[in-house]
Amino acid sequence: MTTATAPPPSAAPARRRKSVLGTRPWVAACFLLPALALLGALVVYPIGYSVYRSLFDASGDGFVGFDNYQEVFTDERIRTALKNNVIWVVVAPAVATALGLIFAVLTERVRWGTAFKLVVFMPMAISMLAAGIIFRLVYEQNPDRGVANAVWVGIHDTFAAPAPYPGARPRPTGDLAASGGAYTTKAAVRAGTAVALPLVAVKPEDVGGAKEAIPARDVAGKVTGTVWMDFTKGGGGTAGKIDAGEKALAGIAVEAVKDGRTVASATTDADGTFTLPAAADGARLRLPAANFASAYNGVDWLGPTLVTPSIIGAYIWMWAGFAMVLIAAGLAGVPRELLEAARVDGATEWQVFRRVTVPLLAPVLAVVVVTLMINVLKIFDLVYIIAPGSSLDNANVLALQLYQSSFGTDVNQGVGSAIAVFLLLLVTPVVIVNIRRIRQERKGR
Image 1: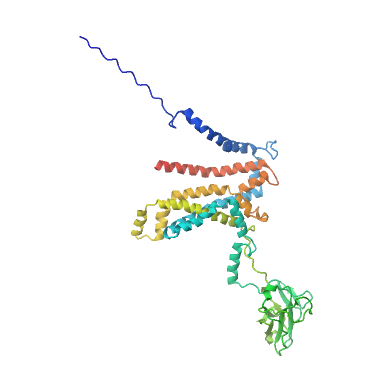
Image 2: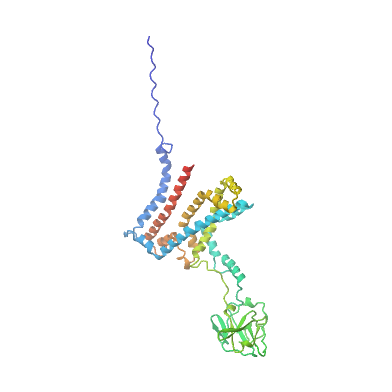
């Protein structure tokens, strides 16, 4: 008796393989198409057109090859911009990251650390335009308006007293002659005869509470005299003579000079009088320039020499908070047991910071530095707003020169496109380094 054998089971249908994206390719293409279209329209096409346009002249009709790129490296303004960009890339990210690291580490040990972080990070909420306007006022040359110079002048005047009567001078027809900012009598003086030394152009605020001037008495064997403000309120009076109501100039240094040497000196009293010893007989009297030197007005922060460091200072004020927040986030993930183990082994706080904390934060520090480097290579608005017209060429950077070459007074979009391509080439290595670092971190996980 034969038994019927069951038919062999049919082969299971082969599964359709999915793509790397985990779905059908046409579905993925539908989702990616809008993003790719935007990427092509906003990134790929502008880059391609910039490369193409950089090969033509200002009109866009004449092919010039690499002449525009040659101008990029030979034009003095563009070379200055390139030099300033190097300064920006070297200084700004390093200083901002260092300050962010210091702030992040120190605020961990204080109770009001959160409030401090909030204050330091707050400038990030301000636009570059607003920050530029703020620091244009901060760096104002006039100490009455610029905060930086107000502080600087205050410190300076603490250690160096200002001149008592800045800008004061004698009358052109008087007995005093100008010499290098000082004023000297035209004739030698004699002991026993009082000398009159009138001055004008004294600021009212400098003699507001001064006493009235009095004529000096003749003293045998000594040289006497009076220094006063030869001006009568409301007009009138006689030039060169002390009239009623005219103010004494106290605190003025008076020197007796013979053969180029100072043989005696004195300072005027509250009533403007002074007395010199017998050694002054036959000498000429000199009022040193230090009595009349202009008031110290601080530093020319936005002058050709300091304009770039000053703008970098404004940038650091804005971005140190960004660095601090990122570093503080990385610091929160540092294993505390490693820090405690180092302290137990006898390491000082500086050694813990330098040999444990900083190495563990190296990936975060790399992120901050690379991000800031990319950012400063594109810096434009701070420089354009803060630098005055007289110093704009000295503060020039590539992004600003790109704008000036493309849309400024001497429009040449061929050169502007060449600068744009060159700037892209400068940014590309930094971006590649950043991408490789991200990939290595993912592999490490």
